[in-house]
Image (cartoon, rainbow, N blue to C red; front, side):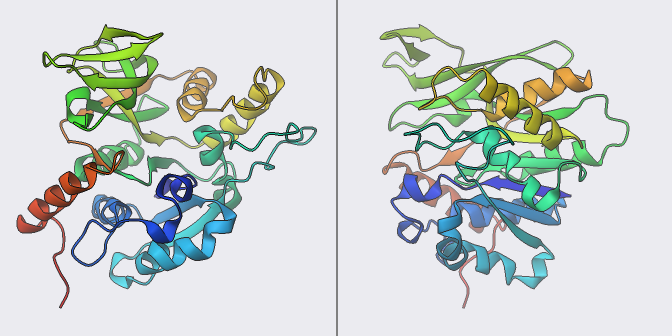
Length: 304
């Protein structure tokens, strides 16, 4: 069972991979704990989607450490998100430097997996999801009787906020049967002074329930998704309205896949708290949380 980790944006967000701040007692990054939780859930292979120019830095920083831990029993592979990785008949618009988005990033995994090799789970490299999230995704992929073409680990909004600024979240509409009806992308959500939560749009704050289910890009997708995403990227390029900035997002690719396969997208709610270093001051909070899990024996402690 394969986990695809979107890590192509790590270099730009952290000012270079070698400048990433460790958050564990042995110099671990969030990604180390992501892999630990994934292996514990039963994943046997990981594909890191990175920028090709970051390959050696990525290996030196985190990749080799994971690959060399034989006790994990994990196969490690790399795929490259390239701006020029486009379907036949298309070329990069002159002046475009921005990557094509998260849907295109996952599509890069076909370099390693082909377009029809089993199901995959997908996560971001710089988010700490918790072990329950990986168990949800693994169990969905392992269930041969599933009635959905994909599964999203649904986080509760209040468990994904930071005290240090706004966050971008996909706010979900979920049917009573537990299937995804819609995702509304909100790029600036924050806790307000009165304790409520709201998102900013057109310079106006709009209320949103703190108990809303949100997408954190933790998906389990059945065989056929990569082939569908390849077709979807072609359609995206054919209808490109903003050649310099428009992106092919993963939720869009997943939604298109659901329509093609004729099955819904399941949402499994998790009570896990999300942790990430969106802002500099978030680091101390993540370090404290990791230390608490080490104290509980859920993560390994300091070596030597």
